[in-house]
Length: 397
Image (cartoon, rainbow, N blue to C red; front, side, top):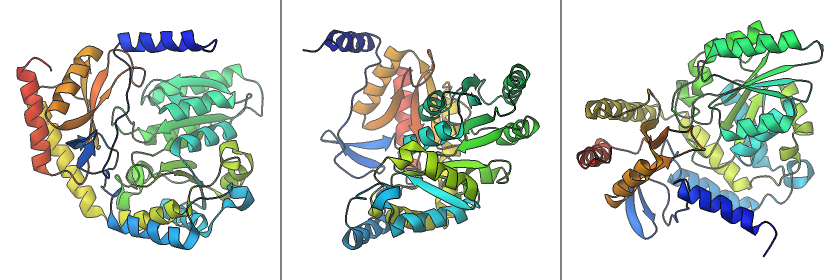
């Protein structure tokens, strides 16, 4: 027994009583539309593998070859002896893909966001983030020690008001302003109003950072993401974050920007400096994924067709759905208990759908987070819709 045991148990008991206790599932198959979990086969609507690349034979071949050539582990941090040729090549290719001078690869998206936000701002600065930003961005802002403010979701006027207030109250000439937003919001599925946000940043001399984890690979010309889709320049969005664990189908993340930005982060981003590099094989697989993504307009077109069809049918059922034209399709249930009953029913029917509750989302907005993939076919969507309709008749929706 430790002096902390009673505190831990009380917190767990509280979470269980509130219907918020999470549990892990054991996946025994590759990611895909049909997965094996806890000994049973399900149709999956809860993966971020938007283009179906996580089990693509071309990625597996690239990783396997790299393991033979380069071994398994990174072996050291990038600044000691862990920066492999595969990492360097991937960074060069990402820079070209995003239209920026340089890129820097991280072992995870959470690590990248913590590292970049905390390195770019200090206690004399202000960090301004969208209220619905991912937890890693929020934690990065808190870790920086800067004055931290969350503006109203997707509201450029709210952001402008906070930036103006910061300028009025801060007389230090060296005080900087960093604005941080998701490109596609992970729980609501809506796309940030980046044009308006970037214009506000220009007016207030603020640096804009966009985490396009859920946009890259899926949105924009050749999958170049929400920033490219909105035709914003590097000057308008100087700091771009992307992840590999979603549409890329691998693991890790990157930041792309000017040579000066990347050189600075290489020297001052602590989570980058003091972490063993990702396995070279993962970098090799990601390079292959990047090549595939740029030639996957057909996959993106099919995914958009599936999204549009699903939205139309959901509205016909009269469900409380959020407006989203991305692969993330939230159905608002509100009650945690009702959501758990609905999720359990769908699982019994052979479907895995994310049951998202507070604190991941605000109170009273518990939801089914349906995520669609380019691998889903109309019959997959029809089967889920039939079960949702049945749940309505049973009073579960």
